[in-house]
Image 1 (cartoon, rainbow, N blue to C red):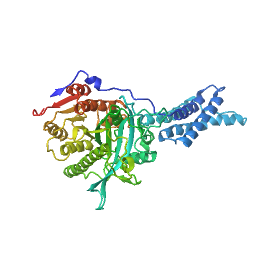
Image 2 (cartoon, rainbow, N blue to C red):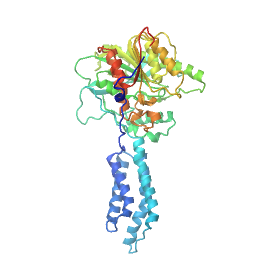
Image 3 (cartoon, helix red, strand yellow):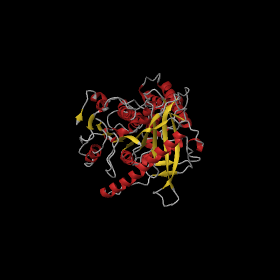
Image 4 (cartoon, one colour):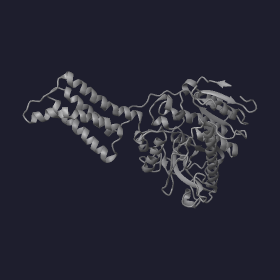
Length: 509
C-alpha cells in the first residue's frame, strides 16, 4: 500500500546552502587579497594607501592563522592570487620612492591579469563552501546532550580478523545521552574523536576509504558537535529508552552524530559502535589504531558471502553491547580500565537506562546488521534500517516493528535491493514501514551533507542540515510509537516525510 500524505512536500526540506564557510581571520585575508588586486584600478591619490593597507591586512591575517589555527588548503588559492597580483601592486610604489616614474600597464593588458587573480582568489571561498568545517544543527529536544566513549571486550568471543587465538573481540562505543545544561562557554565535543589527533586519524582514514586525498576534508576534524563530553546526566530521575547504532561499511561510530544528538535531546540514549577491522579507523584505549581489513573481491557472489559474514560479526557486536548496557544499568562491574566507572560500578547512567525499551539501528551495512541482530535477539523491540541492503539469512521472520528509510529506487539501484528488502518487511510479524525520502541519496542518511560538496548524486538535495533533521524526525516518530507507546499508528506522521509503504502482519503489504 502506498501513501503520500498532504505534508509530503513539506517533509522534502529545501534549504539554501549556507554561505562560504570562512573564519573571521580567513575573511580578513580574503578582503586583503581582493583589495590588493583592486588597488590597481583606484585613483592614483588613494592607490598607495590602499595597497599598503591591503598587504598589511593580508600578511597579518595569514601569520595569525598560521600561528593559531593553521592555514587550511581552501585559503591557498587566495594567497596564490594575492601573490600574483602583489608585484604589479607594489612595483609602482617602489618606483615612486626611488624617484622614478611609475609604469602602469595599459588597462586592456592589466584587465585579464586582474580577472585571473580575482578568479583564483574566488576559488578559495568556493572550495570552503564545497568542503566546509561542518556546523551541526542545534538539537530541537528539551534536553542538553552529553557524550562519552567506552571500550568493552567480549571474553567469550575470539577476534576472527586476527590469527592470535587469545585475541578477543573488542568494540568502542560512543554514548549520547540527555544531560544537564552546561555553563556558558563549556567546550563542545570534538567531532570524529575524543581528541583532535584521533579526529584527524579517523578523517584521513575515511578519505582514503573513498579514494580522496585527506587534505580535502581537513575541515572535518576541526568541527565541534553540540554535545559536551562527560556532561552530568539529566537529573530528573527518569529512565531513557536505548537505541544502538551500527555505521555503514568502512564507517565509524560518529558518522551519524547529528542524528544521535537529536535523539538524545528527546530523551533517548544512543550507543553507536565502532567495529574494529571493519570501521575505517578505530583508536583503542591503549593507543593502537585498527584500520579496516574488509574489501570487495569484485565477484558479486563472493562479495555477498563476505558481506553476510561481516554482517554477522556486527550483529554479534550489537547484541554484546546491549548486554553490557544492561549490566551498566544494574551497576555491574565492567572491564577494568576500559569500561565506565573503571570497574567500580558507580556510573552516572546506572539505573537510568531502560534497556527493556531498546531499538537497533544502522546505516547501509549497519542497517543489515540491525536486521540480523533483531532476528537473533528479541530484546530489541524495534529496528531502523537506513538505506541498508539486507545481507545474510532471511529467517527467522522479524518479530519487531521495522522502519526502513531508502532513497528513491532508480535504474542504477541494485535490482536485488528492493525485492530483498520488501521480502524481509512483508514476512515480519510486526508492522513495518518503508519510507522513500524524495531528494535523498545514500549519504543523506548520515552526517555527509554537513561537510561534503552539495552534489545531488552524493548527498541528495535536502540541504546541509535538512538531511539530518528529516532523518531524525522520521525515526523519532517511529521510535516514540514503538518504544514509548505513543497512541495511534505512526504511518500518519511518517507519510509527511515522503512516500510510505506499510506492511501489516499477515497481509504482506
